[in-house]
Length: 358
Ligand SMILES: Cc1ncc(COP(=O)(O)O)c(C=O)c1O
Image 1 (tube, rainbow, N blue to C red):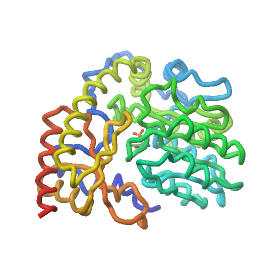
Image 2: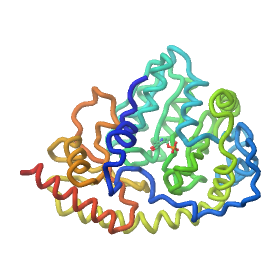
Image 3: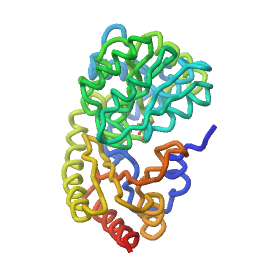
Image 4: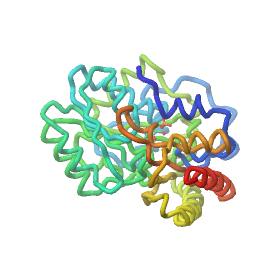
């Protein structure tokens, strides 16, 4: 299996070497003190597809069609892995995006699929480009919206066009909605043949619960559920109980998200404006992070210098792209942080950018 570049950077190269984290893509994390835990909870297994309590909460939040089913997973990551492993076979064609979430091309390729990773840019709708990469052999199209790392969302017209094309060839449209706010506007409501994935990691700031889910066609979910029996059996009962409440209380968590997102974005925009000849901000559409393009310089060098000399962590473009994707010319910076933390991180980046400019 190829090296997972995002996680190699976060969990090995940078681990323990930073004080300011502008790299993890979720809102500032919550703590155990922010949730209620009952000492009487039974430390049993839960069900393989998730507890009734959590699945009911997700049903209420999304209101999916009767043809759809819900599977709880260990983060969005496990849901996607179970999906690729249970629904894809050697020779299937898969369409996805680059830069993007490496799992979407690496796991299908490992299975023996033929993968087209469509190059996406912040200024073009991915719908048309991805739809034109679909052919009669395409079994699955994997879209991320809101997009990581670009922070942009597919338009209603773009998603309808992509869904129509998938329906023409019988491909499953998978939407990784890891950064979705409003479950009622999830693309699972586009119609049949759509499967969405999300989790509590990013907008709720609870990645340590490792609780995610997939919602999609019953037969596809059934295949994933069976595969899960061979991997983790079921999620943690403790985490599921906390998660069920978090899903029901999503409006409160989103208010917390907004209170960090708004001021952070304003500070980031002001900072980029002072370096307009060097940096271009791609306006984020609701994500806790933003994509910042560099007029010159190597994003890998900038990220490494920020880490080694200033103990500040950001993500360079190269970790989101296959090795042959070309130069690393952008940084992903998470700004949904308390202002003093963000100020410290941007201050360090200012020094690094001054040095690069010479
Ligand atoms: C686009 C995308 N998909 C999936 C994941 C997996 O996250 P988790 O397993 O915590 O839900 C991430 C994490 O950063 C992500 O950015």
